Amino acid sequence: FTRRSISSNLLRAVTRNSHTLAFLETSGSTLTPASLSALTAAKEIKKPITALLVGPNAKDAASSVAEFEGIEKVLIQTDKRYEHYLPEQITPLVVSLLQDSSKDISSFIIPASAVGKSVLPRSAAILDIQPLSDIIKVVDPSTFVRPTYAGNALLTVKSTDKIIMTSVRGSAFPPADEKSASPAPIEEIAAVDTDCKTVFISEQLMKSDKPDLSSAKIVVSGGRALKDKATFDSLLNPLAEKLGAAIGASRAAVDDGYCDNSLQVGQTGKIIAPDLYIAIGISGAIQHLAGMKDSKVIVAINKDEEAPIFKIADVGLVGDIYSIIPELTEKL
Ligand code: FAD
Image (cartoon, rainbow, N blue to C red; front, side):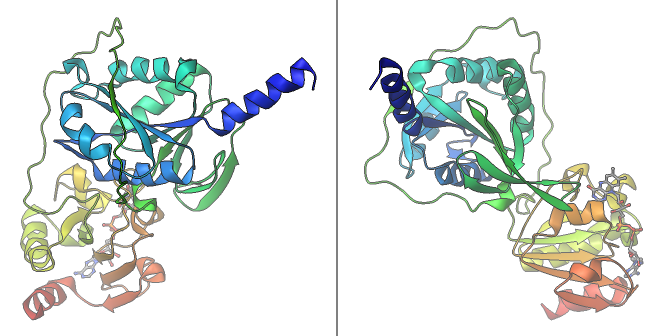
Protein backbone atom coordinates (compact mmCIF):
# COMPACT_ATOMS: atom_id res chain seq x y z
CA PHE A 1 0.00 0.00 0.00
CA THR A 2 1.17 3.48 -0.73
CA ARG A 3 0.71 6.03 1.98
CA ARG A 4 -2.08 7.58 -0.05
CA SER A 5 -4.07 4.38 -0.49
CA ILE A 6 -3.76 3.59 3.22
CA SER A 7 -5.15 6.97 4.13
CA SER A 8 -8.01 6.66 1.63
CA ASN A 9 -8.82 3.19 3.02
CA LEU A 10 -8.84 4.66 6.49
CA LEU A 11 -11.10 7.46 5.29
CA ARG A 12 -13.53 4.94 3.82
CA ALA A 13 -13.55 2.98 7.08
CA VAL A 14 -14.27 6.16 9.02
CA THR A 15 -17.04 7.14 6.59
CA ARG A 16 -18.65 3.71 6.96
CA ASN A 17 -18.83 4.07 10.72
CA SER A 18 -19.86 7.71 10.70
CA HIS A 19 -22.95 8.95 12.51
CA THR A 20 -26.38 10.35 11.81
CA LEU A 21 -27.21 13.45 13.84
CA ALA A 22 -30.98 13.42 14.53
CA PHE A 23 -32.48 16.70 15.77
CA LEU A 24 -35.52 15.67 17.82
CA GLU A 25 -38.21 17.98 19.21
CA THR A 26 -39.73 17.41 22.63
CA SER A 27 -43.13 18.21 24.06
CA GLY A 28 -42.81 18.10 27.85
CA SER A 29 -40.65 15.10 28.62
CA THR A 30 -41.54 13.10 25.49
CA LEU A 31 -40.65 13.29 21.81
CA THR A 32 -43.20 14.80 19.43
CA PRO A 33 -44.92 12.33 17.04
CA ALA A 34 -43.01 13.89 14.10
CA SER A 35 -39.71 13.29 15.93
CA LEU A 36 -40.57 9.64 16.59
CA SER A 37 -41.15 9.24 12.83
CA ALA A 38 -37.87 11.05 12.08
CA LEU A 39 -36.13 8.60 14.40
CA THR A 40 -37.52 5.66 12.38
CA ALA A 41 -36.14 7.26 9.20
CA ALA A 42 -32.79 7.83 10.94
CA LYS A 43 -32.62 4.13 11.84
CA GLU A 44 -33.21 3.20 8.18
CA ILE A 45 -30.01 5.12 7.27
CA LYS A 46 -28.24 2.36 9.24
CA LYS A 47 -25.57 4.46 10.92
CA PRO A 48 -25.24 4.94 14.69
CA ILE A 49 -27.53 7.80 15.74
CA THR A 50 -26.51 10.78 17.83
CA ALA A 51 -29.73 12.42 19.06
CA LEU A 52 -29.77 16.18 19.74
CA LEU A 53 -32.33 17.60 22.20
CA VAL A 54 -32.47 21.30 23.07
CA GLY A 55 -34.31 23.56 25.50
CA PRO A 56 -35.16 23.32 29.20
CA ASN A 57 -37.20 20.11 28.60
CA ALA A 58 -34.22 18.32 27.07
CA LYS A 59 -32.96 16.98 30.40
CA ASP A 60 -36.34 15.43 31.31
CA ALA A 61 -36.71 13.82 27.90
CA ALA A 62 -33.10 12.63 27.58
CA SER A 63 -33.32 9.47 29.67
CA SER A 64 -36.32 8.08 27.77
CA VAL A 65 -34.77 9.06 24.40
CA ALA A 66 -31.54 7.29 25.39
CA GLU A 67 -33.48 4.01 25.58
CA PHE A 68 -34.48 3.98 21.90
CA GLU A 69 -32.92 1.31 19.74
CA GLY A 70 -30.28 2.67 17.36
CA ILE A 71 -29.33 5.72 19.45
CA GLU A 72 -25.69 5.65 20.42
CA LYS A 73 -25.48 8.97 22.21
CA VAL A 74 -27.85 11.74 23.34
CA LEU A 75 -26.55 15.31 23.23
CA ILE A 76 -28.49 17.86 25.28
CA GLN A 77 -28.30 21.63 25.51
CA THR A 78 -30.74 22.98 28.09
CA ASP A 79 -30.17 26.73 27.87
CA LYS A 80 -33.34 28.85 27.95
CA ARG A 81 -32.40 30.46 24.63
CA TYR A 82 -33.47 27.19 22.91
CA GLU A 83 -36.82 26.97 24.72
CA HIS A 84 -38.98 28.13 21.80
CA TYR A 85 -36.99 26.48 19.03
CA LEU A 86 -36.04 29.77 17.36
CA PRO A 87 -34.27 28.73 14.14
CA GLU A 88 -31.87 31.68 14.55
CA GLN A 89 -30.61 30.05 17.77
CA ILE A 90 -30.75 26.39 16.76
CA THR A 91 -29.03 26.76 13.39
CA PRO A 92 -25.60 27.82 14.77
CA LEU A 93 -25.71 24.93 17.25
CA VAL A 94 -26.52 22.39 14.51
CA VAL A 95 -23.87 23.85 12.18
CA SER A 96 -21.20 23.72 14.90
CA LEU A 97 -21.92 20.02 15.52
CA LEU A 98 -21.89 19.19 11.80
CA GLN A 99 -18.56 21.00 11.43
CA ASP A 100 -17.03 19.26 14.45
CA SER A 101 -14.90 16.49 12.91
CA SER A 102 -14.63 14.68 16.28
CA LYS A 103 -18.41 14.00 16.08
CA ASP A 104 -17.92 12.33 12.69
CA ILE A 105 -21.38 13.12 11.32
CA SER A 106 -22.17 12.28 7.71
CA SER A 107 -26.01 12.43 7.84
CA PHE A 108 -28.37 14.93 9.43
CA ILE A 109 -32.07 14.34 9.96
CA ILE A 110 -34.81 16.61 11.29
CA PRO A 111 -38.63 16.31 11.24
CA ALA A 112 -40.28 18.31 8.41
CA SER A 113 -42.13 20.28 11.09
CA ALA A 114 -42.29 24.10 11.30
CA VAL A 115 -38.94 23.92 13.13
CA GLY A 116 -37.34 21.54 10.63
CA LYS A 117 -38.59 23.54 7.64
CA SER A 118 -36.76 26.54 9.04
CA VAL A 119 -33.59 24.96 10.47
CA LEU A 120 -32.76 22.61 7.57
CA PRO A 121 -32.38 25.20 4.76
CA ARG A 122 -30.56 27.69 7.03
CA SER A 123 -28.01 25.11 8.20
CA ALA A 124 -27.55 23.65 4.72
CA ALA A 125 -27.01 27.09 3.17
CA ILE A 126 -24.28 27.92 5.69
CA LEU A 127 -22.55 24.60 4.94
CA ASP A 128 -23.10 24.94 1.17
CA ILE A 129 -25.01 21.65 1.05
CA GLN A 130 -28.10 20.80 -1.01
CA PRO A 131 -30.77 19.76 1.54
CA LEU A 132 -33.30 17.05 0.67
CA SER A 133 -36.60 18.08 2.21
CA ASP A 134 -39.67 16.07 3.10
CA ILE A 135 -38.32 12.58 2.38
CA ILE A 136 -40.87 9.76 2.40
CA LYS A 137 -38.52 6.78 1.90
CA VAL A 138 -34.91 5.88 2.61
CA VAL A 139 -33.54 3.86 -0.33
CA ASP A 140 -29.95 3.77 0.96
CA PRO A 141 -27.90 6.14 3.14
CA SER A 142 -27.52 8.68 0.32
CA THR A 143 -30.67 8.00 -1.76
CA PHE A 144 -34.17 9.09 -0.80
CA VAL A 145 -37.67 9.41 -2.27
CA ARG A 146 -39.46 12.74 -1.92
CA PRO A 147 -42.71 14.07 -3.40
CA THR A 148 -42.85 16.95 -5.88
CA TYR A 149 -45.63 18.85 -7.70
CA ALA A 150 -47.91 18.69 -4.64
CA GLY A 151 -47.39 14.94 -4.34
CA ASN A 152 -48.33 14.21 -7.97
CA ALA A 153 -44.85 12.86 -8.76
CA LEU A 154 -42.13 11.20 -6.70
CA LEU A 155 -38.43 11.97 -7.11
CA THR A 156 -35.69 9.52 -6.22
CA VAL A 157 -32.69 11.69 -5.36
CA LYS A 158 -29.10 10.74 -4.57
CA SER A 159 -26.85 13.12 -2.69
CA THR A 160 -23.09 13.28 -3.15
CA ASP A 161 -22.64 15.96 -0.48
CA LYS A 162 -20.17 15.31 2.33
CA ILE A 163 -23.01 15.55 4.84
CA ILE A 164 -26.44 14.39 3.69
CA MET A 165 -29.08 16.68 5.14
CA THR A 166 -32.74 15.63 5.10
CA SER A 167 -36.07 16.50 6.65
CA VAL A 168 -38.62 13.71 7.18
CA ARG A 169 -42.32 13.72 6.37
CA GLY A 170 -43.88 12.39 9.58
CA SER A 171 -46.86 10.65 7.96
CA ALA A 172 -44.52 8.49 5.82
CA PHE A 173 -42.71 6.70 8.68
CA PRO A 174 -44.23 4.87 11.68
CA PRO A 175 -43.22 6.18 15.12
CA ALA A 176 -40.10 4.56 16.61
CA ASP A 177 -40.99 2.34 19.53
CA GLU A 178 -38.25 -0.27 19.92
CA LYS A 179 -36.23 0.08 23.09
CA SER A 180 -32.66 -1.06 23.64
CA ALA A 181 -31.52 -3.07 26.67
CA SER A 182 -28.65 -0.67 27.40
CA PRO A 183 -29.50 3.05 27.31
CA ALA A 184 -27.17 5.40 25.40
CA PRO A 185 -24.98 7.86 27.34
CA ILE A 186 -26.23 11.43 27.72
CA GLU A 187 -23.77 14.28 27.17
CA GLU A 188 -24.35 17.96 27.91
CA ILE A 189 -22.89 20.16 25.16
CA ALA A 190 -22.07 23.85 25.17
CA ALA A 191 -24.47 26.46 23.79
CA VAL A 192 -23.30 28.47 20.79
CA ASP A 193 -23.27 32.25 21.21
CA THR A 194 -24.77 34.23 18.36
CA ASP A 195 -25.64 37.84 17.69
CA CYS A 196 -29.26 36.68 17.24
CA LYS A 197 -31.63 39.64 17.14
CA THR A 198 -34.81 37.59 17.11
CA VAL A 199 -36.64 37.52 20.43
CA PHE A 200 -39.53 35.27 21.39
CA ILE A 201 -42.49 37.37 22.54
CA SER A 202 -45.54 35.12 22.80
CA GLU A 203 -47.47 32.31 21.21
CA GLN A 204 -51.17 31.57 20.95
CA LEU A 205 -51.96 27.90 20.84
CA MET A 206 -55.30 26.44 19.77
CA LYS A 207 -56.70 24.57 22.76
CA SER A 208 -58.75 21.53 21.82
CA ASP A 209 -60.02 18.48 23.62
CA LYS A 210 -59.87 16.55 20.33
CA PRO A 211 -56.92 14.45 19.14
CA ASP A 212 -54.12 16.33 17.37
CA LEU A 213 -54.80 16.53 13.62
CA SER A 214 -51.23 15.63 12.63
CA SER A 215 -51.18 12.32 14.50
CA ALA A 216 -54.87 11.33 14.86
CA LYS A 217 -55.90 7.87 13.66
CA ILE A 218 -59.32 9.13 12.49
CA VAL A 219 -60.00 12.53 10.88
CA VAL A 220 -63.39 14.01 10.04
CA SER A 221 -62.82 16.80 7.53
CA GLY A 222 -65.29 19.44 6.32
CA GLY A 223 -65.39 21.51 3.14
CA ARG A 224 -67.19 24.51 1.67
CA ALA A 225 -70.50 22.62 1.78
CA LEU A 226 -70.62 23.25 5.55
CA LYS A 227 -71.77 26.86 4.84
CA ASP A 228 -70.59 28.65 8.01
CA LYS A 229 -68.83 28.21 11.36
CA ALA A 230 -71.94 27.31 13.33
CA THR A 231 -72.97 24.63 10.82
CA PHE A 232 -69.38 23.30 10.61
CA ASP A 233 -69.25 22.89 14.39
CA SER A 234 -72.76 21.52 14.87
CA LEU A 235 -72.44 18.91 12.12
CA LEU A 236 -68.83 17.78 12.57
CA ASN A 237 -68.27 17.93 16.36
CA PRO A 238 -70.85 15.24 17.32
CA LEU A 239 -69.54 12.89 14.61
CA ALA A 240 -65.90 13.50 15.63
CA GLU A 241 -66.78 12.87 19.27
CA LYS A 242 -68.50 9.57 18.45
CA LEU A 243 -65.42 8.43 16.50
CA GLY A 244 -62.76 9.94 18.80
CA ALA A 245 -61.57 11.79 15.70
CA ALA A 246 -59.65 14.98 15.01
CA ILE A 247 -61.29 17.63 12.84
CA GLY A 248 -59.76 18.79 9.57
CA ALA A 249 -60.90 21.14 6.82
CA SER A 250 -60.38 22.14 3.21
CA ARG A 251 -58.81 25.49 2.44
CA ALA A 252 -62.20 26.79 1.24
CA ALA A 253 -63.64 26.06 4.71
CA VAL A 254 -60.68 27.79 6.38
CA ASP A 255 -60.74 30.81 4.05
CA ASP A 256 -64.48 31.26 4.61
CA GLY A 257 -63.88 31.33 8.37
CA TYR A 258 -65.61 28.07 9.35
CA CYS A 259 -62.60 27.03 11.44
CA ASP A 260 -59.03 27.87 12.45
CA ASN A 261 -56.36 27.59 9.75
CA SER A 262 -54.42 25.08 11.86
CA LEU A 263 -57.08 22.57 10.73
CA GLN A 264 -56.30 22.96 7.02
CA VAL A 265 -55.36 19.74 5.24
CA GLY A 266 -53.49 19.90 1.95
CA GLN A 267 -50.56 21.26 0.02
CA THR A 268 -50.48 24.48 2.03
CA GLY A 269 -51.85 22.89 5.20
CA LYS A 270 -51.09 19.71 7.10
CA ILE A 271 -50.06 16.50 5.36
CA ILE A 272 -51.60 13.57 7.16
CA ALA A 273 -52.13 9.83 6.70
CA PRO A 274 -54.67 8.64 9.30
CA ASP A 275 -56.19 5.15 9.31
CA LEU A 276 -59.56 6.68 8.36
CA TYR A 277 -60.23 10.03 6.62
CA ILE A 278 -63.85 11.14 6.14
CA ALA A 279 -64.17 13.98 3.59
CA ILE A 280 -67.50 15.74 4.06
CA GLY A 281 -68.61 18.15 1.33
CA ILE A 282 -65.08 18.41 -0.08
CA SER A 283 -64.69 18.32 -3.88
CA GLY A 284 -61.18 16.80 -3.94
CA ALA A 285 -59.00 19.49 -5.57
CA ILE A 286 -55.40 18.27 -6.12
CA GLN A 287 -54.14 20.67 -3.48
CA HIS A 288 -56.45 19.01 -0.93
CA LEU A 289 -55.57 15.48 -2.06
CA ALA A 290 -51.87 16.32 -1.57
CA GLY A 291 -52.55 16.43 2.17
CA MET A 292 -54.62 13.28 2.67
CA LYS A 293 -54.35 10.84 -0.23
CA ASP A 294 -52.05 8.50 1.73
CA SER A 295 -54.77 7.90 4.34
CA LYS A 296 -55.39 4.17 4.74
CA VAL A 297 -59.17 4.30 4.19
CA ILE A 298 -60.85 7.32 2.58
CA VAL A 299 -64.58 7.88 2.87
CA ALA A 300 -66.11 10.67 0.76
CA ILE A 301 -69.58 12.12 1.20
CA ASN A 302 -70.67 14.50 -1.56
CA LYS A 303 -73.90 15.22 -3.41
CA ASP A 304 -72.08 15.46 -6.77
CA GLU A 305 -71.29 11.96 -8.01
CA GLU A 306 -68.74 13.46 -10.43
CA ALA A 307 -66.72 15.07 -7.59
CA PRO A 308 -62.99 14.20 -8.03
CA ILE A 309 -62.74 13.04 -4.40
CA PHE A 310 -64.60 9.86 -5.43
CA LYS A 311 -61.66 8.88 -7.67
CA ILE A 312 -59.47 8.23 -4.62
CA ALA A 313 -62.18 7.25 -2.12
CA ASP A 314 -62.40 3.66 -0.85
CA VAL A 315 -66.00 4.27 0.18
CA GLY A 316 -68.17 6.87 -1.54
CA LEU A 317 -71.56 8.07 -0.43
CA VAL A 318 -73.48 10.26 -2.89
CA GLY A 319 -75.99 12.40 -1.06
CA ASP A 320 -76.77 15.47 1.01
CA ILE A 321 -74.48 15.84 4.01
CA TYR A 322 -77.30 17.54 5.94
CA SER A 323 -79.23 14.30 6.09
CA ILE A 324 -76.34 11.79 5.94
CA ILE A 325 -74.15 13.19 8.76
CA PRO A 326 -76.90 13.38 11.46
CA GLU A 327 -78.06 9.88 10.46
CA LEU A 328 -74.50 8.50 10.54
CA THR A 329 -73.83 10.12 13.92
CA GLU A 330 -77.09 8.77 15.30
CA LYS A 331 -76.36 5.24 14.06
CA LEU A 332 -72.82 5.30 15.51
P1 FAD B 1 -65.41 23.16 -3.23
O1 FAD B 1 -64.43 22.82 -4.29
O2 FAD B 1 -66.31 24.31 -3.45
O3 FAD B 1 -66.28 21.85 -3.02
C1 FAD B 1 -67.40 21.77 -2.20
C2 FAD B 1 -68.03 20.39 -2.45
O4 FAD B 1 -69.14 20.23 -1.60
C3 FAD B 1 -68.53 20.19 -3.88
O5 FAD B 1 -67.94 19.02 -4.41
C4 FAD B 1 -70.05 20.02 -3.73
O6 FAD B 1 -70.60 19.07 -4.62
C5 FAD B 1 -70.16 19.54 -2.31
N1 FAD B 1 -71.44 19.89 -1.68
C6 FAD B 1 -72.05 21.11 -1.63
N2 FAD B 1 -73.18 21.03 -0.89
C7 FAD B 1 -73.30 19.74 -0.48
C8 FAD B 1 -74.26 19.03 0.29
N3 FAD B 1 -75.32 19.66 0.83
N4 FAD B 1 -74.07 17.70 0.51
C9 FAD B 1 -73.01 17.05 -0.04
N5 FAD B 1 -72.07 17.69 -0.78
C10 FAD B 1 -72.21 19.01 -0.99
N6 FAD B 1 -57.18 23.40 -0.72
C11 FAD B 1 -57.10 22.60 0.37
O7 FAD B 1 -58.09 21.99 0.78
N7 FAD B 1 -55.91 22.51 1.05
C12 FAD B 1 -54.79 23.15 0.66
O8 FAD B 1 -53.74 23.02 1.32
C13 FAD B 1 -54.86 23.96 -0.51
N8 FAD B 1 -53.75 24.62 -0.96
C14 FAD B 1 -53.85 25.33 -2.12
C15 FAD B 1 -52.70 25.93 -2.64
C16 FAD B 1 -52.76 26.64 -3.83
C17 FAD B 1 -51.50 27.25 -4.37
C18 FAD B 1 -54.01 26.78 -4.48
C19 FAD B 1 -54.10 27.55 -5.79
C20 FAD B 1 -55.15 26.21 -3.98
C21 FAD B 1 -55.09 25.50 -2.78
N9 FAD B 1 -56.23 24.90 -2.24
C22 FAD B 1 -56.10 24.09 -1.17
C23 FAD B 1 -57.59 25.19 -2.75
C24 FAD B 1 -58.16 24.10 -3.64
O9 FAD B 1 -57.77 24.35 -4.99
C25 FAD B 1 -59.70 24.11 -3.60
O10 FAD B 1 -60.18 25.39 -3.93
C26 FAD B 1 -60.28 23.72 -2.23
O11 FAD B 1 -59.69 22.53 -1.77
C27 FAD B 1 -61.77 23.54 -2.36
O12 FAD B 1 -62.35 23.26 -1.11
P2 FAD B 1 -63.71 22.45 -1.00
O13 FAD B 1 -63.55 21.12 -1.64
O14 FAD B 1 -64.15 22.52 0.40
O15 FAD B 1 -64.71 23.38 -1.84
